[in-house]
Length: 242
Image (cartoon, rainbow, N blue to C red; front, side, top):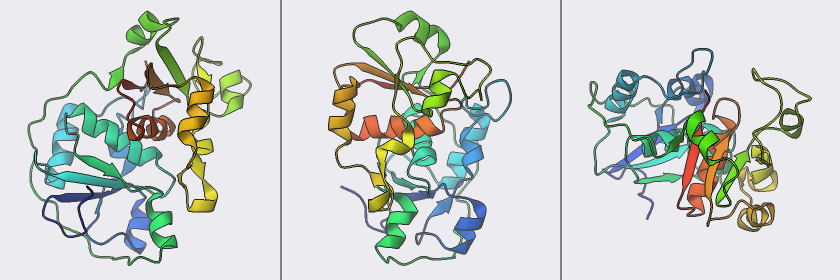
C-alpha cells in the first residue's frame, strides 16, 4: 500500500522543474532535477548517469532498503517513469507512481508547500543491475523474436522518419508505435488512461512478451516503461540509446 504523507518510510520525489518546485510542491517532496537522471553527454545523452552521480543523488535522498518511494512529475509521467527505471537499476522495487502527478494533485485541491527538505547524507554505495536496460546489441539479438514487443514512444512522424531528431531516421524493425502522450488522459489531469491495458493488447504489446521501450533519450519512454510496469508486465526493459 502507498505510504501516507509524513510516514517515516516515505521518500517523495518531485521531478518537475526548479521553478515549479519553488512555486509549490507536495509537502515533504524532495526535488530531483530531471537532468540528473540522464548521462547528458552526446552521442547518447539518455544513458544512465555515472555510478558516482547516482550514489550522490540517492545519498541526498536518504535512500535505504526499507524506504518506499512515491514519484511524480508535472508532464504525465515521463521523468517519473525514468526515475522508476533508475530505482529498478539500483535494485529497489518499493515504489509507486502518483498517477497524474502534480496536475492531478492540484486538480484534487490538495495542499502545496514551499519548504525544501535538507539533503540527507553523502554518497551511498549502490549496486547497478543490467536487467532493466537493453543495450543495442541485446536489442539486435532479440529482433524478430515472437515473444518481443518493441514499443516506440516517439511521435508518428519520428517513427516514419519524416521528422528527424536522432542520428538515424526511421524506426527499429518491427517496432510498434504508440506515442507516450496517447497513454495519458487530459480529461483526468494526465492520469494514465483507464483503458490502457486494452489499447496495448490491441497493439500487440502484451504481458506474455518481453517489452523493450524506447524514444530517443529514454525520457518519453520513461512513461511507457512505467505503464508496462504498472500493468504488471514481467519483462520490461528501457533502451536508452547506443
